Amino acid sequence: MIRVGLVPGDGVGPEVVGEARRVLEAVAAAGLADLSFREFPHGADHFLATGETLGDEAFAALRDEVDVILLGAVGDRRVPDNRHAHDILLGLRFRLDLYVNFRPARLRDARFSPLRAASDAPIDFVIFRENTEGAYSGAGGGIRGGTPQEIAVGENFATRWGVERIVRAAFEYAERTDRRLVTLADKANAIPQVYGLWRRVFDEVAAEFPSVEAERQYVDALAMDLVRRPARYGVIVTDNLFGDILSDLAAELVGGLGLAPSANYRPDGPGLFEPVHGSAPDLAGRGEANPLAAILSAALLLEHVGAGEGGRAVDAAVTAALRADVVTPDLGGSRTTSEVGQWIADRIGSAG
Image (cartoon, rainbow, N blue to C red; front, side, top):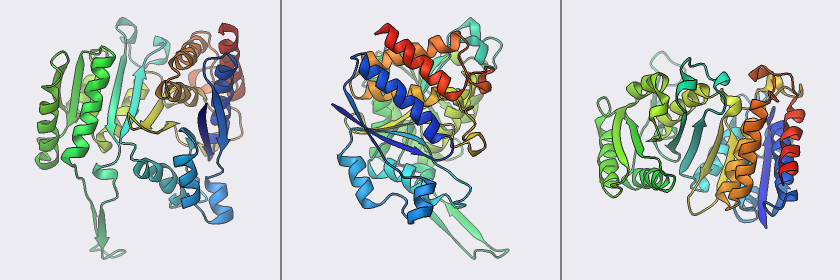
């Protein structure tokens, strides 16, 4: 039995998680996975009612009493500093040591790409973003707040241990999935201390994988080349900040954030899976939110726990929905959130 923890969160989160759950239930009904579900209330409503973001008891339950977590979205204007979102999302990433942020970018239908040449060559690459170090770690501080002399410091750092494990995960994935090129994105020309370490470790690990081509690119040059010839790339590995930026660029190349799933995990441990489109409060309750990113995140979840057949069934059903124009308004369609989810669930049921 695979125990799935659901954290619907804020805004459109409950709507898209609801459809992802519907699809997972269809996978289970088709005999492709043995799943149970437990829902957690943590989000802005829970925080405003109780003052709790993610307490120790809830964290322990998510750590010990479920196998994987599906998160909708967190972020609410009623919590201006977004402390609940920080504690839930970043807290789980750091406290569970989910050092891999995995962002696939695959174009399923050329109509949804802004690139004119998208139909000429397949776009299908993945980004391995280091998830626990760097500029997003919270290291830094400030003095003289609120004065003209205010100073703010945000620190970027890398450890050899942290860099090596994400780089190794990227090469292992490339070798396992027969992707022949791993690209390091860095800014070693401007920040040689941190990215010099990244380059040295990258070269050392690359030497252990002679069947995989390795290259290093400055992140700005890589961003331009991803627009010019995205089909060239297979696996990109980089730090937290650059990975955040490149993965959103990659999502836009293949149809936008409504089609962008993600996984936060340790290769040998737990995982947290989430769409990356945010809570989109203006769309909440209107039935217009695109559930495909959440559903594709559920497919990644199934792959992570060894239910690969179920994950592939979900992935194929999403592709079929796109090609049949069963999509929400952001992709030019007229279907509601629940209609898209139901169509995909029915597709899996009929295939099973």
